Length: 329
Image 1 (cartoon, rainbow, N blue to C red):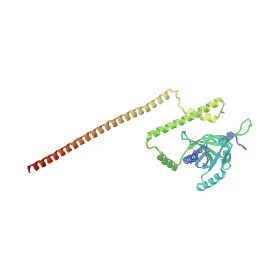
Image 2: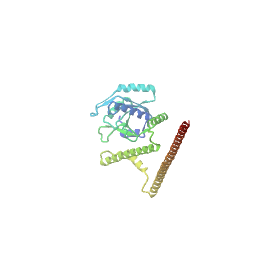
Image 3: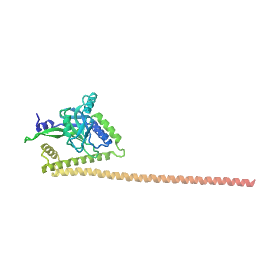
Image 4: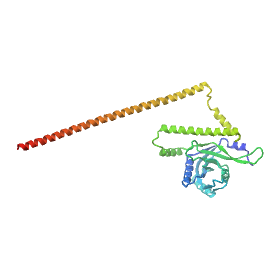
């Protein structure tokens, strides 16, 4: 018996997939080893963790041999025996980590994803699929989680399988946070300051926000053009987000924003002036220090020349006295 689409959406409502940093590092290492073999294809692996109903905790992963034809999406190979062998070994190490889904490095959905997901249903009743974007130029959360659902049409046409996107987050346990901090400390550029790091992080966040707004804009244009059907859940989320925005047409709110912005810019202006004054003071102080050093060096050279001249005079006096004594004899 196939559950209706609304029942499947209700069952998945509120589900959040939590991905740990260890999984991201493992997937990145898997992709890097594939690139080292001169392969630009995506990599596939198994996700391990706990499925607590509304929260799916992805705590570990391992890569699996996977090959596919880039030209023909129907042609692909996945090693079943490798999955079973590796899972048996992981189960001996940590029995709490069970097989909960699979991942690939997309970075987008592929035509063969439904077939691969059906294969994983042999081991898991409801596998989660996580796409991990390993491209270094992307900003934002690098994970997208999906569940396979069967869409039932009202007109009685054939049931169509599709993927339903669910929220994902990056969280770490205390031990993982310490490990990530040590790792970042080792790869941190010592020439950059804390302020520069914070500014670069805020810039990356704004770029990620701009990318998401661009996606929302293109989606709404496709809905208006009739290319995509209306998804009421997405519309509800957009409406909630827009309701959280301040009403800039209100003069009181506008004045409050202006006052806050002016106060922040005043602090930036005073900080810039203070940095300029400190830099000029350091320049003048350095110049004065160099001048004093040059004067002391010149005085030392004059004293040395004076002593040298006196030494020469005394030597000449001794030579003259010696010659006069020789003539007297």
